[in-house]
Length: 203
Image (cartoon, rainbow, N blue to C red; front, side, top):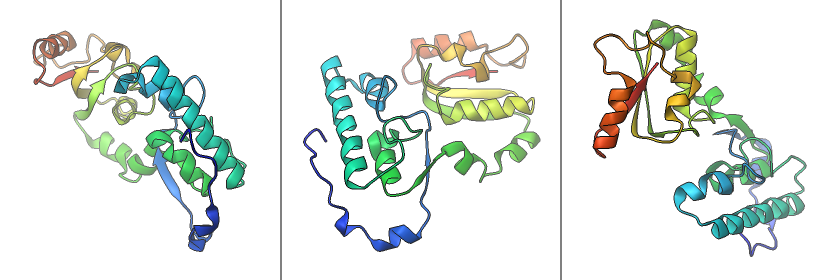
């Protein structure tokens, strides 16, 4: 995208102007700036500082060319969800799509709150739980809603990363885990001793 100079919209299907495009995405993922997807997720994927700067410049150029050639008036750099899927959110927004928090689209469609109200225990899972989890990740939202209904939550993960125990949605309280359940420290120790055994937190 660093070498992108021009977008020719003449081949766009005219039917796009007559349909409503709703995109379920993470609103915390923005295209440009200090919290851009390149800066937040690039290092997690192994990008060096130099590569992060290159990726950031490429996404900035992507936003500039989109706005210019597709006559976009919305904020493609810092708008919520514009950085989703590596900039796909900005591309869809340039075509007129509405970028919506995925919780509103997915969890409400599933009538999650009604299901939580009937539950005895709520299980949620993620590949890794860390300080990024509260920023638009499904487990944090599931846990937040479950706590509104007073339901205990067990979060399972392949790994517990930095800040996992400070996520507000499941920061354990003394009465969080039923007596027969292993404590969060047990799960954390198990995760550290075996890469193949799932870890978890309850709250």
